[in-house]
Image (cartoon, rainbow, N blue to C red):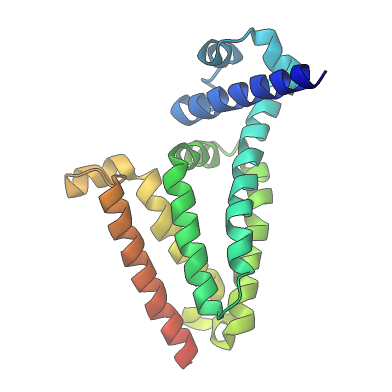
Length: 206
């Protein structure tokens, strides 16, 4: 019984990984269950056994990403130290997560534009956004409104971070280099951390 359970879990993970790759490469509509089954080397019926439908499979892929992101970021927000230290840790952690999960941004970009799964994506994103607002509001009264409003700051840094991955082909043409290379990602991380430190110092001054 234990061996069977392990085998089923392994099959489920293989399906999730294959679906992750194909959803990222081709989008939800073009990634058929037949192609997913062929990618992971299983019978198509097993996909329906584990997930019941392609829609449920996509939701499982999406949920798995956000579970991992929550696991990566939650301890950083709970770290001891100043709010600025925690915010910098979260920025580093978020960039590290995206660097390790490059298909995540491609998958989101496709689905947000199509709006087919926007409700579920927002169900994951809104609590994370609200948590960031709460940290800033609690630590910095100046983030309540104006040019240093928490909402605007979070949107700005979200755009600076995510665009590296969502627009990587265009950025590669701009800089004549691979923006996702280890060296360029490290440079990008240092730059965004520097920008965050400038903003946090401004908040502290206010």
